[in-house]
Image 1 (cartoon, one colour):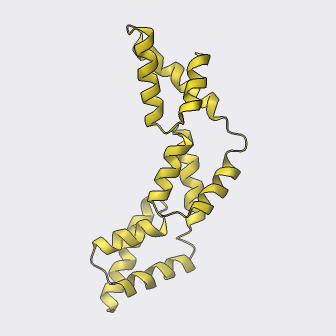
Image 2 (cartoon, one colour):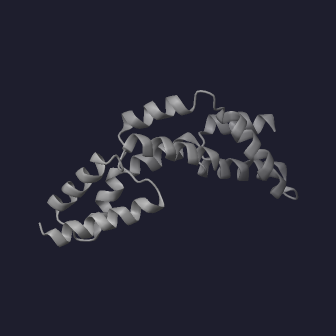
Image 3 (cartoon, helix red, strand yellow):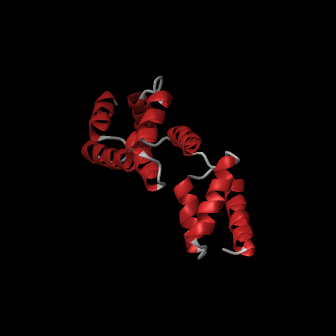
Length: 152
């Protein structure tokens, strides 16, 4: 491990963290693509963890909050976090904390009501199919979507 390689790795991580918080796995993957040695990656990650610049729990919390505002469904958010290397137990704990006063069904109904305006000249059955597909792609589960479609 060279001093130059360590310096380059730290600069890369600084640049990435400047834009948004990232998971440890995201940073590891990015450094691997830059052909940085495993020992340098470990040292760099440890350095930033000690500074509390890498914190998977905080990253998870912020990711959930921002994605719920978009709005995306729980399934999609959990899938994204899993792909970013966040452990399932952290995902579950943060979801429990952040969704205590969050009503997914209200969000789905509101989203569907806004979206249905785009389907004015489409027959009702086709409207429901399109709405269902739209909401499913946003990560809402089918039972929630069906309840929302009945309310519209």
